Amino acid sequence: MNMLKLSWKYLVAKPLNTGLNILLLALGLAIITVLILIQDQFENKMTKDAEGIDLVVGAKGSPLQLILSSVYHIDYPTGNIDMEEAQSLSRNRLVKNIIPLGMGDNYQGYRIVGTNHDYLELYKAEIEMGEVWRKPFDVVLGAVVAEKLNLKVGDSFIGSHGIGSSSHEHDEHPYKITGILAKSSNVLDNLILTSIESVWYSHDEGHDHDKFEADVTTSGFPPADEDREVTSLLLQYRNPMAAVQLPRFINSRTSMQAASPSFEISRLFELLGVGVKLIQGLAFAIIVIAGLGIFIALFNSLKERKYDLAVMRTLGASSLQLFIHIVLEGIILTFIGALLGIAIGHLFLAVLVMQNEQGAISGLSAAVFLREELYIIGYAIAVGFIASLIPAWTAYQTDIAKQLTKS
Amino acid sequence: MLSVKNIKFQYDAQNSFQIPDINLKAGEQLLILGKSGSGKTTILNILGGLLKPDSGEVKLGDTLVNQLSGAKLDKFRGKHIGIVFQKPHILAPLTVEDNLRLANYFVGAKGERNLELLKELGIYNKRKSKVTTLSEGEAQRVSIARALANHPQLILADEPTASLDDENAAIVIKLLQEQAQKFNAALIIVTHDQRVKDHISNHIIMGGKS
Ligand SMILES: Nc1ncnc2c1ncn2[C@@H]1O[C@H](COP(=O)(O)OP(=O)(O)OP(=O)(O)O)[C@@H](O)[C@H]1O
Ligand SMILES: [Mg+2]
Image (cartoon, rainbow over all chains, first blue to last red; front, side, top):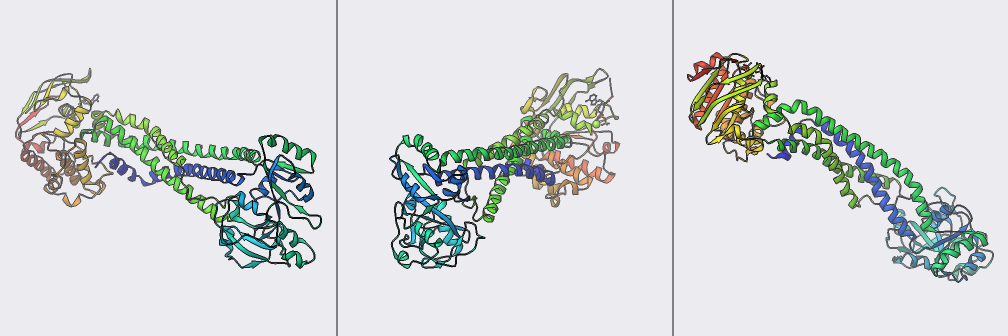
């Protein structure tokens, strides 16, 4: 027998009360756990995906939409831009590197992105099997795409117009898989990569077999055989000066728009932050209620337990031990509540991720544990301590003789 | 071994008590009889260190009980004084055996005698039960076992037979006497129950309020 066991015995003697208090607290903490997990991974993922991209240039429209569609591949593109105009940018001395992107097709919901090999280099992507694309209609699959669609090197498929999975199929030229990327835990995992030429030719009317046999461009812009368009450009600055001049120049002097990923993303988080704050507030309210519940439960049980406490004193327990006895009850309750809450939070996130295989949260993992979760446990224990303080003080002051003579 | 001298105590102006001096050697037994309201529980509480007398001294062994306070008093009480109440007051969330172990824990005793004690009191096969499943007589025996779990030098019993029938009352008194004898402890039983008189010859009568 020890203090912990004693408090535990008193808790399990009232399973309903104890269970409800634990559950209420666990719910509040689960919400906070999910928020922390999502926020942390989301921010990490978002910053990681935008690394090395100083500016995105695309058709005029919403800058956030441009970033979401061109960097994270989650929203629809703002439109296409003329390639000649785009190409003129690459001659600007403030520009270090430009990667063109061409979008518009998908296969089973996974976006087919036309680009060049610089894009792979930008993310330091590694080929797991096969090799990179060399000819039109050669594609390289992201690791998740290959795994989810069960495709291998050498397989071919026919893409569909549009970037959502419901769009209609091309009846023309099939894509051939030449390589599969190693898993990188970034946006590439969910993409099907190919050359700009593939995207162009798949939308062309006629079949020009000579073109289909020619090698594709691996860096820079492909030579235009007619009036061509691309969707957007990922751009790196040559010097800090560019950050000041280039966006202003593009936005005012061209028919394109420039958007900075870091700026748009922090704006997005600000917008989301309001919602997060709201949910956080709700979770804190639940936790306060849970704390009150524990306080009330302990305080009420004290009335029936004063006699027990007096008996313990006659058995040799000191006032301090009674104090500890009650405080331990609060702490055990909240400690279990915290563990349960964290478990529920992770479980909830796991279910969420499983149900959103292609969405923005598909890349999140429920199996990540953060230091903040330790804080949750500490925080919960503090709640238990505070909630049990007054009841414990009452127990501390129990007048034994009076209690024993009473009933 | 137990000596009580010149104890005066009052709750308030109307309730003041003059308590007779008591001298008991180890192994001796004393019955304190008195009407309801005569101050029997009060005197027991003073002897057990649950109430502080206004004056006088309670000495157990070499220790002046009335001069101890705080945790020291609690530990001394737990170690050396076993108290049996009118109602059993077993801690309901714990099993019979754990009630004894808790008494051991509070004073840091090992409790090697617990099972033997339960056997002698005829409640060994109930040791894993919760108190709610015990009969009144069984429960009273558990409270005796618990009071004895730490080998007290002094056993105080407040109307231990009040709610028991003749047969059980006799059993409980006999058990208290046997155990006190076995461990050479002083035994004081406080009661208005005349049945107990047949078992203990040494008795004093509380005069009531002075
Ligand atoms: N805490 C208290 N404050 C004031 N008066 C009290 C208190 N406790 C007891 N008394 C009074 O002291 C007197 C003696 O009480 P006590 O409990 O010692 O009697 P008792 O002899 O044990 O009676 P009973 O046989 O009914 O148990 C009673 O008149 C009671 O009302
Ligand atoms: Mg009484």
